[in-house]
Image (tube, rainbow, N blue to C red; front, side):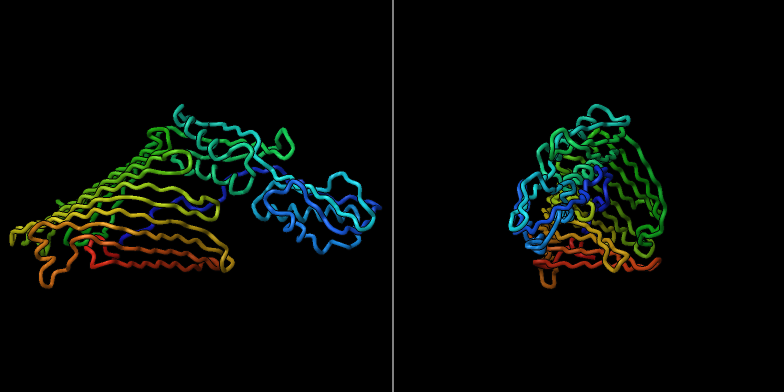
Length: 419
């Protein structure tokens, strides 16, 4: 089947070391007050009305210093539950009235202070410079610290081939600031290879396959990946060769993907007398960019173009046909994990739209547009949807679901149909 969901980075928790939460402990005090309300200072993320609402049950209720400290902790937990991991609320020094007074609570919304990047490992100067730019572009001093803010640069760095990363958050020099140390382990160029055998092919074109893949990571010291795949079959004239190159662009996770493939086939067995042979050439270029990159949810935008050329020949009777398909596509791709049904699950999805044109040689055009023809030539549009879900239950039970759907403006060429 035509796969619509390319391989994306999987959700996962990055290695982030945070300072120990400074949860203020209630102090013992003989002070007794009945606050008429609460006032907040320092808050910019949530308005005062929202925060006052959290403490509505404490208004006009007898309290002491411990109770006021607990009220401030309620606000701190509210921030942290929404991703503001280091924000703290406390009771500042003030004059408290025994009854009918307004209690002030100060909110310190933590912001990024200094950012340091340390690169370990045998990385070259180019790799070190690139990963530093990625880290610094995504951790800007003065930015509010959230879980997402800390996770994203580490995850983007770990997406780069040959790179691992972690972050440590430390108290900053000024109140309300936190310094971030990003530790990166970057490798130089790395060569990997794998070989395999299978019998998954069509018997007429060669059922037995021998496959070899060579991959070079970090060739330009930018987290790039070059790959070469070759597949030969027991039919002497059937083969597949594929080149791929992925190059990160910029500092926000954008990636350029280049691909070229060549397939040759020759039908044997019961089709030998036909002398049927053919080839397919595919060239593609695309850009992907993370719109959301987090530990539980990823969303990517996709923009690409591809060109396909198919040539089919038969010796008996003598014939030759040629098809060319050029198309542009764009879409959204993503994946996420959750804790549904207790044991959790993982999902991936893709929604892609394509607009393209099919061009046929003169003879094939006549058959295609004639009486009883398939009428695939010309401009076409299609929308593809794919959803995959792995739902886990008590070990070892799980359910795997794959749903595909396609909507097209006309009858599609076989290469564009959902298989």
